[in-house]
Image 1 (spheres, rainbow, N blue to C red):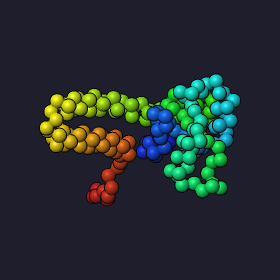
Image 2 (image 1 turned 90 degrees about the vertical axis):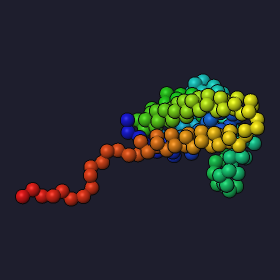
Image 3 (image 1 turned 135 degrees about the vertical axis):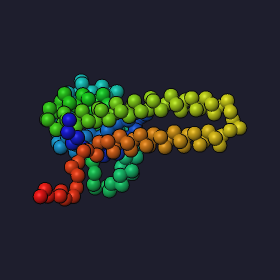
Length: 181
């Protein structure tokens, strides 16, 4: 499948509100190449498909934090609190937005969420084991910090390898070919 949006771009659009990872309506609308008001209208028309664990509207405090984070002026940006979609809500969007692009981008986003969850589970086991070791061997905290740093570096290297694999494709050699006599 052709990658329509770079994975790192999608990762930057994932926020955490109320203890869950979400994407905002305006960011999803840009990725799907539809107007935000169209996306919101489709969700409101099909609101039964979006229970609170699939989609919620940011409250005033969360909206204020978001405005402050983006540095929007009093006259710019959204006037209405955005809808925040969880992984399940994003999957549900494909049932109300039927454009080819929306479906393709949706698949990319769901795969990214799945990969992030898998990495978290994999590394969580390692970190739990190290944490257990840390509690039993309190006087070796310096060594344990080194182990944590190594684990974090390994996680970053794995992420970089994954991104590099997506970017690099077999390319034809560059240069001149010697002409046959």
